[in-house]
Image 1: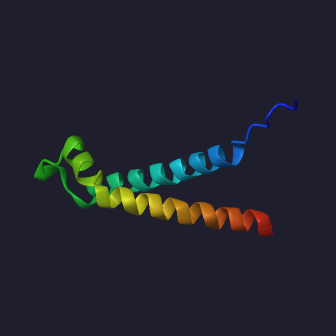
Image 2 (image 1 turned 120 degrees about the vertical axis):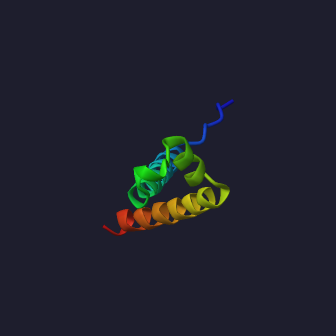
Length: 80
């Protein structure tokens, strides 16, 4: 009997890493924007900014945009 071949997880891990890095950049950009648009005189703290940035709506936007970015980069990789 031949042993079963395990599925190659490399494409899945690659997609997860690339999407994770895009999501990280998205959230870091949102967090920097929270502090850029607000002044410290208003008393906005890091905790308040994190609570404001991490919402369900922002998470859905981050996942959809990271998926679109991943598909675009894969398309460009195969074309070039």
